[in-house]
Length: 168
Image (cartoon, rainbow, N blue to C red; front, side):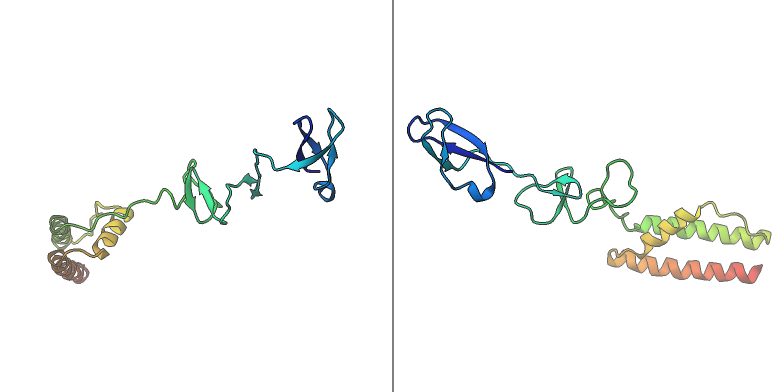
């Protein structure tokens, strides 16, 4: 049953009563002087709205909050610590600079020369993750000069891969 606040017009006494909603607007007797008291709207008001077991902030627009930041959905899967995928997004790696592209091309040339000279394919010093990162960074758009160098490096690397295959 909800609690309602009443004030007596004779003795100015304020009191609260638990009443069914259908009797809330009816006058109630004052406990101090027994006069009919009218219902008043309380100055303190709070509402608890729960969704997914957690209290919501009002007004509720249907969104979710994570550590004071608005997110579109709650955490549903496994996360590290209290990180939220929307709040803690990783920044994409920067595109490869011209110097990095030329260094990559040089290392590929050295690797190809070793393969051709020895006839054995040595283990590349890059792991699969490092190679995937390089490939991803090469696909990222860059300046006009970087794009020109990327095309040249990609063509050179394809040519070196072909040389390796034909030499073995």
